[in-house]
Length: 209
Length: 77
Image 1 (cartoon, rainbow over the protein chains, first blue to last red):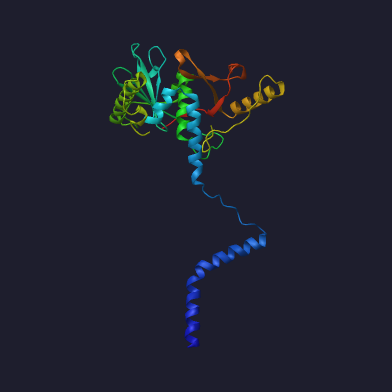
Image 2 (image 1 turned 45 degrees about the horizontal axis):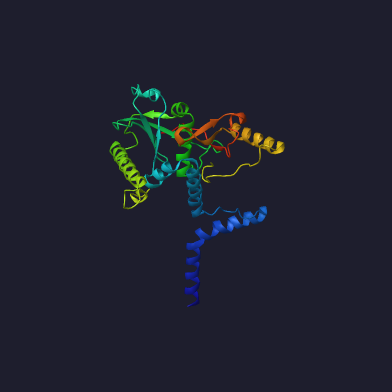
């Protein structure tokens, strides 16, 4: 009986030795080196949410009320282009008004305002150059605000910094046209609401951001 | 704006006070030397909001209440 138990214990010990020996070895070498256990960074699931919350507050404080409502309701911002003949690489807009759609962490899309013809996609990022080996990206709303500031502050510089691609490379043209349609509907509802003859729900509740 | 963190207050002060102004100038230069862009949101024509990209401390409008620093734009994929 005793012999059988001893044999079983030996077998069990042999089986778990692969797990135990490295740990003991690690503990022993740490003890010899008088080292403390390296602290591990625990993941904070609320950090990104708090960062985005701060970013939304900052964005709201910078853009006007209409733009904020647009971003909140539709999930993107429209910025009007100011160059007389459109962005340099478009080949001229003939003076037709054009605008950009700004999505968080997606390319900026230029389009003609009246015909909704898509002009170009401008791929741009805001990398953290203080951390060249990989870094966290800006919160969504900060990315939108950075694009908004760069476009409204110096459109030509922003466009020249971006990589230009034809429409459809990253943004689905059908989705963009749907967004432009949503934008026009949203603007109509907003105008009705502001004129006071709406009588129904606020345009704020048309769709979720 | 700091990747992964959002808005971070870097410095604040009153430019009417000499020591505050000097500190703000130094911090402004430090941020630009680190490769960041600086912008000041303002009210433009027809009440539309826009921003001014500033490259020197003197470019900042006298009535600006803040300067926002953000990473320099680069071509993305």
